[in-house]
Length: 295
Image (cartoon, rainbow, N blue to C red; front, side):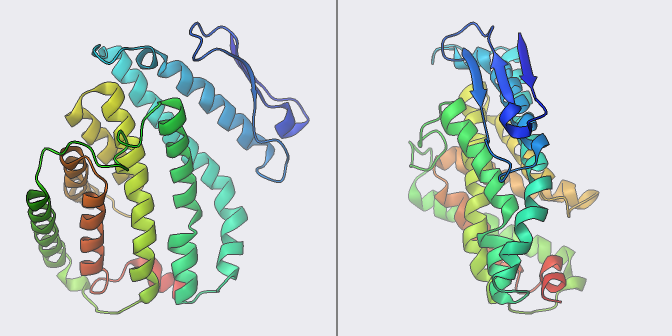
């Protein structure tokens, strides 16, 4: 029987019961999480424990599989569904965490360039929660190594020279297309808060989406193209400022990030591409949130 019991005592009453899971690796009698009201409101602990139950159940097949076995379509669907559950968990936690924490981060430096650097990039709640959820899932639930999530370089299909050439070529082409398409929005303006902040926030995004997320999909579906499409779709979903045809264009421009990660087996290369694009475009077309934040 799988159940999450939440007593009126709030978080201390949230207990994950997964008594009937068959494999030793997944069998737990109970799991108590997030003790104490000071961390999250009562409902969040129940959401977390419910998500943990669902994710463990969905991915149980691939976790029992040997390295030589190929996952069935049902296993792939299970892993994909588990990833979607994790993504929904990130969004649900952020619904509570952002209003509770973000004002305190903004109060550190106010609506200044330093505040832009801290609250929108370095200490951005959304980035930290996303990184924590995907990271715990990849490293502890999906049992990925640092090579699996591309934190340590693996056996690349490309030479260093080819990696550099591809990154530079993609950065130049995509920057040129974006600047041409949005040429009416070009209004040069330098903000050190966003330019330096991108060094941190881009690292968060690459590690979360093309490290943890893509890594666990590649390892457990063993279908590279499928994994890259799913990871890119979720990456696009998290950039909700792009709608309609802009979202389609974002997907097309974001897909090379996943492809380069898969080919080079190292997060350094998509990170460099991300930085090249942002440093090339942001001073010319300032993101909307920057001016609204600074007032």
